[in-house]
Amino acid sequence: MIIAIDGPAGSGKSTTARAVARRLGFFYLDTGAMYRAVALQFIRQGLEASLEATPDALSNLNMEMVPGADGLTVRLSGEDVSDLIRTPEVTAMSSRVSQLEPVRARMVEEQRRMAESESAEGRGVVLEGRDIGTVVFPNAELKVFLTADLRVRAARRTAQMGDGEEGAVRKEMAQRDRNDSTREASPLRRAPDAVEIDTTSISFADQVAQIVALAGERRRKGRV
Image (cartoon, rainbow, N blue to C red; front, side):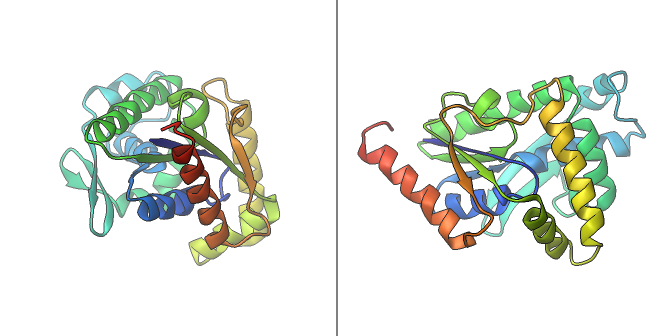
């Protein structure tokens, strides 16, 4: 079974997907971490986030996502970069490289390969992002679109960062929403058959429980 969770920044996709995977015993594929790893590749090679530089960045890309007891380990050319990809510099670069069509095409290819490898081993997979249910796995057995009020999303992200000014975070997030929804390559949008869950006023436990329940319904109906 493949569960695709999409939504804008700060809607709780990553933490929710991770918790859902844990509850169901599925493999969690952090697609955001994949783009961050590519961003780190650009930075390390001294490249700008441009179409011209993309072939150089992708030509020797060696990325692994390894599940473990402490979560997902991200390796770039054999090096554990799980912490390095969470820096502000990488975050900013990730936002830019994720808009490059060749990068997105390569990541879609990698995401499908990893998910299909897990499925072949009999494991369910949970993926989150902005185009999982529309582009990467349009035939996913369960599609969920998480959303929330911009102010709530900004407050969550500010608390997650541990510093920063909420107004500035909200402004940056609004710009990210515009970029994600208007870009030519795989824009953010809800798949017609996705279940929309507004997380503005529900608890984290409730949103996880809703998705786990939806997965159970799909199984009981024999759709999986």
